[in-house]
Length: 505
Image 1 (cartoon, helix red, strand yellow):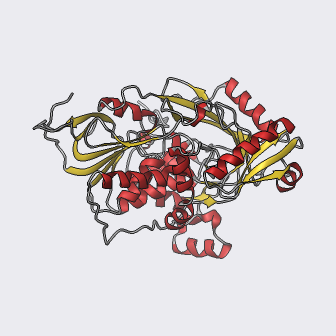
Image 2: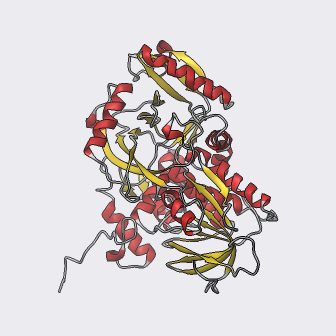
Image 3: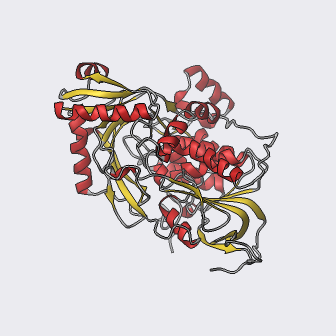
């Protein structure tokens, strides 16, 4: 173990490791209190791990095993999303969700899901096949019924995470990107009953703190083991692959789940807040914690699963493929018969002083994230931390103009005040130069192409950035005052340009 050292940077009360949706919600909720908070992320931007590639569904909570942390956090978190969307100004739609039974043999599974929902206090209703077809004309004619959950919905997970992150930063949290956790710093023993964390060591230096909150996603078990916490706990990444459907060729209004299996909630077909339909995911356990490549077998699997629910889907409408990793774990399952229902780990590490573990946060982690953040605050209080609310705390994160969402009159007024909003850079999604520049100079600067994409939806249409990319590189170089050769897609040696083609020596 590392001996106690004198960190070379200022002391903090709390350090948060990981800037996905859980880390962002923890940072945002903790920023309410008079604490010095450091928040680190190993990548060039927030929202780059599991949060960046998921189904964007806010789950009602009928699926989680009653009595589990998943069930508690799901239901508690679900109820928080309306207020969060109002305060932070991101897209959210409580549109309801459906579990679709195909054929009479799957009908019984709806009763089981309904009973679980009732035990969790979630409103659910079983509807007939005829009613399901009336509500969603694209659903398979073979449906025998569906479980409807009116509290389910969809959101923009990028928008929600970035908005919460910006709100945390404007309320005083220090965010350091490109900062990778390496090890813990330990306090001198001095008669303490257990080892005590005094800070962390990173690739950007050492930082002191009384508490470390582990929200490191697929790497959460690495932090736990470095602290000597839960040596038998293991995260195994579960890869999920997706198709994105062109909204100009196909649009549906529903979130359709299949009847779940013992290993997965299944391959869904869902609308999104941006109007596209997405299809997926499958569930493949892998060892590589960075492998987000799509695979031919995986893509065949999810297409077959999607057509079971929506037979009219056409591959001609596909505009993108992607994959994400969920932090599946070997945490005890409240129901061993359901492999995918391993429970969350939300705890003060019993083996050491100063570590809170938020681990194994797979689905419904997006839904549960705000509730997990509140639970982390409760754990700090239970440990004796005195949390004093700041009189200056502001729960609001102001919205920035989204040109395509404005009326003609509002667009004209905006362009008159700032002409750069009249220059369209991304034609598919109608993203303007003014929007791009605003994000480059936002509280968390968007200084890579993907960072701008996550904030504006640029590059997500039919051409997948082929039209806008050269101009975005120019804008980034101009606004950041850097050489175009250094502008990257996502940081970490992902530069677009290799050399100049004119006057090259």
